[in-house]
Picture (cartoon, rainbow, N blue to C red):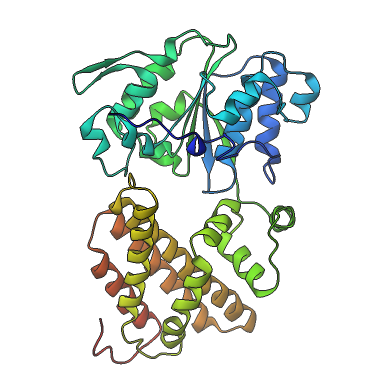
Length: 386
């Protein structure tokens, strides 16, 4: 029996309240959307692109809240501030607005299709698009083209596709037909951190809006506005780790990345001083494995493979943060050799992420990463490497 999507997990609802607060640090993107709303002629296909965690989905949901209001005032448009007590707002809060749908890879776990429910959630299958938006046949069952229906509330239908780069070529080509001839009063927003993975034909049909990492002042404003305050070394590390992304900073707090930075510090210190860090690769693997197991335990529908990749990405960010801080300190001290070593090690981390993306064995990738960084830092003998 199909399990219904839990309201707390619906983006934009009170359980995942993105889009309720003002958007920080994205003045250019917000102004472009504001001008569009003022003009009254809203393009039907959009791409919101930029780094992870900088507010793309939050902006998409806030834009959707404005688009779904039947009587939006000029003041609300100028402030890019949708009402939070209207009928549309309350339905979005409850995760039940019939004209707003957020398409994401996790929807596969709730599919009518046994095959889709068993998928590893490493992409957005075309079947998910057909079930929730485009219509058509999925494993012998026919679905209605939801996007072609008249809006229930008579204003618009809005579809937001998170991580749109995870649509494979088949899915993108199927979606392309809708982008070329969208139904009236439909707005489709593709949210992506990897715009280059979208087909040129898809990109050409969409209005593109770029998002950038937040500047230091915006990040500090965002931090100061939270109920949980941090300061001192913890704040400095979180700001460096986030690299202008509030989403990355929140993830660092909730998933224990600050603890990871402490755990990897001894091994990295040995490497940076030219010594071999015994069992360091095993330590790195244990961190990723524990993260993946915890993710699957917390959500039985989560994919272990996808959790492993996410864990490796988090680990890479922790290691890269340490190296970037070291690189900056070395540059300030005028130590060109150290700068070069740090830069090479950062490239090794990026290559490790690429290898994991190609499904190379995790333990092998991490062992190779440690051995490669040992070469970069001039470690003499690597006997007993693990």
